[in-house]
Image 1 (tube, rainbow, N blue to C red):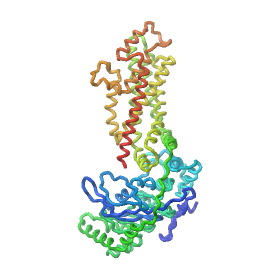
Image 2: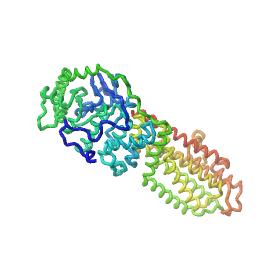
Image 3: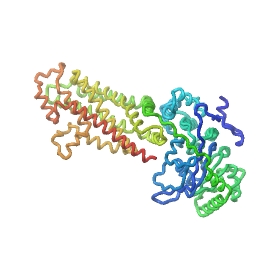
Length: 613
């Protein structure tokens, strides 16, 4: 354990990775890959601004390669090009091959990508999250998944925090930044990729944790994997830990070689690194365009780039580009079957909902309070006069409104925080989008149904609504379906609109429109024919009609209404243009609306996901 907890203080040449052993006992063999890119050029479509120009390079098995340069040099653009991600609005040219074969966006099926932002489900523990990732990434038995997760946690020094909640920055306290970064790598290593990309893996970490992370990447590379990362101003010790570095300046290659060779190369260019300086910081300074000195900076950069293009380093890279000895292509990483995807995602989403007690308790308390309030407001309303009947109908419409309005708004924000994580996992090929969508919708159903029933049963008895078995059953079914229709509407809104603010603003007028066609504010049968059909898109209308028809279809023995008759019942129904046989139609209508909104939500999510590539 002492070895695991020590970040080496040896000189760089003697550093050996203690965090990752040379072999993974459960990950299995890999097919080494060489990634070649030649004459890669990228420019923006609208402004025609050049981001990369004729950039060429090689990443080889067993190497940790760092892309470096000043801000705006093009390192992130090059990384995106190699991964075939985030290229919207760009014109891209050049050839990128894996073991001599062009793969395009299919490169994600053989590679892992550790993004700069840690994206997790913060309510889960480290082990729970990795086990769910293992179900999605590993084709094998439960024992194999358990062993591989245990192995990866040991190798990446996550064993001590395995039972700790991951947490959410600024919201829920959880694991440290270094542990979160290692967890990102652990998730990717479960897939046993031959090629691993990392975007700014040390950003936000102190020097100790940054060195630990690079040490881990170096150890992963020793297993025969090809690792490419972007990094900004590493310390001197970290800089010497990279096997090779590529410097970019103004979208062009300024150097490619080992860290030691970079120091000698820039000395040949007339820019000797002073003894007291960090080599990478000095080199980046010389490759940056200094404010107020643009002309001198660009001339200096041009001289360095020209010197590199005539150097032996450039010739060596070009020779490697022509020599492609590895012809085998790694097999695509495992993708779980549909059943496993739904099961794993349902477990993850279910734990997330269950461990959000603030939302659960807030909704239950809200429904209890509103149930008591409505129950007291309409307490034991008399059925023997028109005012009492009107009050009962008002109470039923308020019940419907509470279902739809509060449920819709409570569920509208479900996707906003999750979208970056889902987009990353979907584009990594972990699961089908529709399996996530089904799992998420299923896990939200219990919470947004239970609270509705609590509200119904509290006010139902206090108001004194009819309590025959069939009427109570129909009221329960209609209430559940109204909750599901409003849940589907809220999910659809969150999938259509990209921000919480826009979702809330756009949903409000739609809910008002649905409420106007609910039947309580006017006889929908008398509305103009051109807009009358809109009532059949309103869950208010079907839920309210169902509850009204159910309430007045018969009077139970607990209410003394001597002059009650079918004629009086029909007068109530005629006031709203309702019919005594409409309950089955209302149930079907709520089901159709629910499925319709769920379908709209999925299509909208699919479109957004395709654009997020």
